[in-house]
Length: 608
Ligand code: ASP
Image (cartoon, rainbow, N blue to C red; front, side):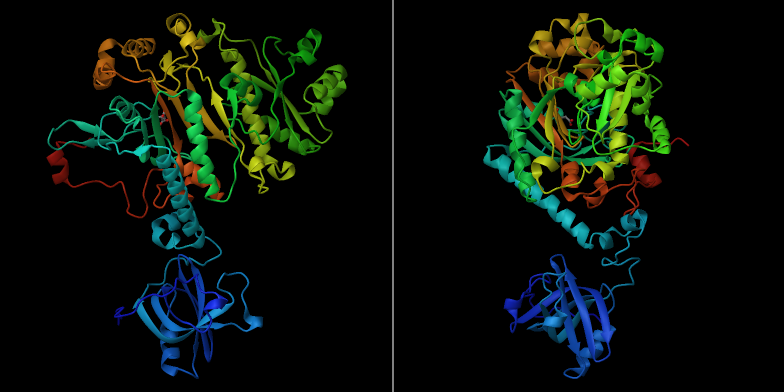
């Protein structure tokens, strides 16, 4: 039944034929996308990754051919040989690039048959995602997926080209290595030759790229897979791809310049001209103005309007004057109904340490002067939605309260972040009304990038009751804050930065510690004993002692960048073979149990 290609050569891709090809011979190969049988005339749409062309088989001019065309089914792989013909004006299909022509077939070869697929690439209604992932090869044939994967390729190439032209080398680092500290659980690989020992898959190439600086490769990058075993969300995958880079002797601004350069190239690949340099904002400012370390600047900032109220007002409202009162303003939402207002309070996901005033009109009625002050302070327009979030209760006596810095204390932080979450939830809910998330084609409006800088060096870990590295323990503190390492850890700022786009963190990086004595101090401040530090990072501490140049870098999530550019709502739309929220690959059915023999060889016993 199966034919072979013989001496056939494909002369065109299925999306390439145009009116100017009329009269020329063509050989197309691809899948049967659709077949329409009009009696004497049979139309077949043939598809490959470039598009679709219509093939005509006319019974009168070639009965055998027409009969063969009748045997074709969806997703058969065929070769069609014939001549390109201009379509009659009334049959031109303006929706496809090849719509002005068709191929009048003289010969058809079936290169392979197909079972009836569970869904068709051309279906307008998508099957459920499980089905799409199980039959990923069919799903990937869909035009949208072909486009996403092509986009991914174009973006990677643009980034590679840019970085290479800037003198960066792409250097591979091992996948089978030892645990690297990015704060997630490791995926482990058992060693057969050393029973009881495990490699860890890298959570990132962090220490290797730093060692590459020590090794003299002063500009490194890698588009690299990273592995993190953590609870998954729509925008997380157990294995994901980073654009990882490191350079010697940079100021943070130099790293930012490189990133802005490759993002410009990446966005250009999809036709968007983004503006650089990106806006810069300190972590403290981001928290105060947006209640988040990844501000979405497509909507106006928030403001502390505590001063709009008199002491008496605050007492009546039972609000502590020592905590911020944050005004959220979202333009163009207009008046909310009673029911809509009722829905706001439950949207506040904070743990009971914030209070919402969702009925601004009523508040204004009861406290006209305060209402007026607030409207002025936030420059409110009549159709703005205004919601206030205030601290509930007293400022907590927290470890981080003692010092002068950061300006945003832990208790204020809780109010700002609660307000920030509510701001986003409202923005999502009323996206249609305010329209700020709708793309306009103007890159400056559509893609709001910024750098968030001066992150705190440490985070208080409630569970472990200790300070933890906010970025990772190889991040350098600000020189001026060094003396507070022991006395006031909350006040120590890191030379760490994030790049943020439309409220999504695209990547983070830092200037690193390049001196062994300082590295040791940081481990100490993190409560790590000398012995523990040696055990985990001995090799790295050793390397630091052999002439380490000052260095710094960053890593950005490639999947996320592609997702945003593709306008997709899940990473799974831009990763060819992704895993589900339960970290399962439905197509290959992984993970699976392995044989007794394999386990035995590895010296592993599974505990029931
Ligand atoms: N290794 C860090 C990460 O994966 C990035 C960096 O500091 O360069 O987030």
